[in-house]
Amino acid sequence: MLLIARIRKLPPAILALFIQLIAFCSLFLVIPVFHQVVAVDFSPMQLAVIQGVLAVAFSLAIRFATWWYVIQFLFAPTLISAQYLHIPSGWFLLAFLSLAMIYWNTFRTQVPLYLSSRKAWVAISELLPAEPGFSFIDLGSGLGGLLAYLSKVRPGGKYHGIESAPLPFIFSWLKANYKGSAFQVAWGDFWKLDFANYDVVYAYLSPVPMVELWQKARSEMRPGSLFISNTFVVPGVNPTQVVPLNDLNDSTLYIWKM
Image (cartoon, rainbow, N blue to C red):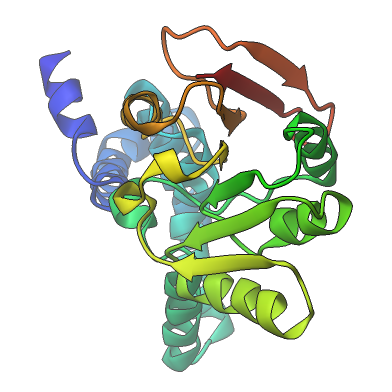
């Protein structure tokens, strides 16, 4: 158990590669057993699929983040497919750069890009203060869809977003500045913000930062302000209100009144 706890502290990308290495080495133990049961020679693609299954099994054993399972399964088969299809190496560089532009800080923060559903937009608009002049911040505002919607249906508020991934930031910045949307978006780290400047703080992140984020919200946000988390709870802290969304992701809004 102690070894697993230490392994889980590795950065997610390093941990994923470590799991793939273990899965690859395990092939040399698993394949002889298969040969004793069925006398067949496995193709490279079949071996890659078995490695993917083993990688998922090891990921489950250490309770790796759920959204990594698909990546772990497809990693080896994708490499083999690329060899079969003779894909030029330049395409891999382009794919890497594109993903880096989208998932810029995921390696460090363990927060992937999640987009709030339209049902979440509507529910959040109904949770905003009735009086105009309130200030709203979207932590990790992505493509700016939520901010654009709220600024239209609840024009009395001041809407802000902060995003650290370059491509989503550029997209949302263009939307804010050249499509007449009444919101502002900044590129940066929301940990450096003072939450006391906002009446409503909204986050759709991941389970990893929730404890630390709650501590920051509790220490900085003003009495009566709202902290809203989409899908991810604060461990051990009961929300003031829970709003099921019944969207495609079966999401839930958790609201804490400070």
